[in-house]
Image (tube, rainbow, N blue to C red; front, side):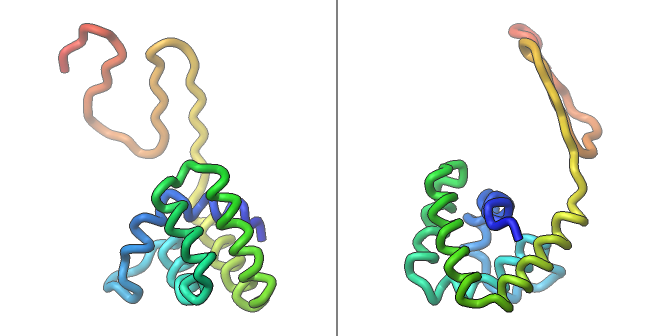
Length: 129
């Protein structure tokens, strides 16, 4: 499993994941399913918990991503069955997510990915929506 890709997948969701209650009603999202499985093991390791909390506060910080990467690598080394389970959940999440690539260049250019309908887009300096 690519732990770096897993950390990148989790990072933007960590603020919500750390504050969520395990077992909330409804069908959990793929990221929630992964975190629900990791939550207890991460909480057992103060350094891993701190790494997750730090990254939640600064999800774009590459150094903090590296710290969480190192903590998850240790966790997975100590618990290979957990690593296999998380790997399977992550592969499933990646397969169901699909990919949208948007390439944009030029002044005031706009890139939109996914299903977007309606709304107003303004690229000019004087346009009033």
